[in-house]
Length: 282
Image (cartoon, rainbow, N blue to C red; front, side):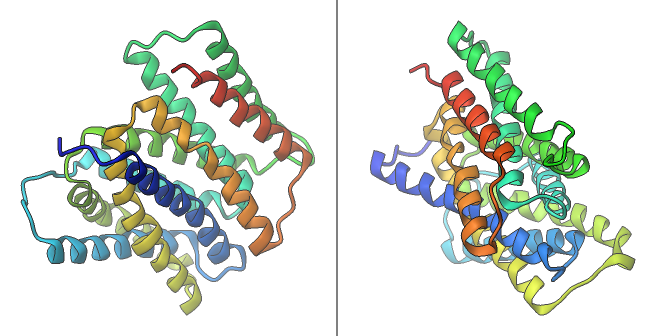
């Protein structure tokens, strides 16, 4: 492992990555909300743009080519996350989607911590129960409940992102590993686009938003995230992502004029508070 960055540097890298995560939710809703692009094409442009940007960055950067490599499993998780993310946001608001996504991420990473031998205290179990209760309440039937299909897709996206994050903690050279994972994901997403070709609906604005999401907030953002991850525990990595749903919801209200329902507000308090309680152990 390389020399540990300073604490302010880790904080800055983590903050940039989290802003990128929230921006991805906003960009996806901007593109899909008014039909500027279909979800399959958005995913394809996003991953291809990310791969091209990272290939360019690595080629300009040079350095030791053996410092780190991606894997097909990580690339599969990246693809599953991105594809389910896009199709879910067809029917979910920015804040609701981000809340389900990162609620699922927290559950995934907490379960991984348990499997690794961590034994929560009673207060941590209470927090986990509150978080799960908030997720159940958010997606339970009712007039204000989000789309069941969209919710299930976003939960699957969160599971995949949780696995991808866990695998990134010991990945090596963050930029090279992220490049490899993006490049490996391209054939997977092209297959999806081929099957959905008859439903393709692209506009210049939609392609531009997807390309920005791929090259900047995904490609560069995930490389930054992988740079910070080795210096965080699994539970710390899960904790810091709790800010993303709030950032995404605020962006959705300001940029897209989305409303915040009581169900979303109550669920946010339960999920974020519960997971924060579960991860409160020093």
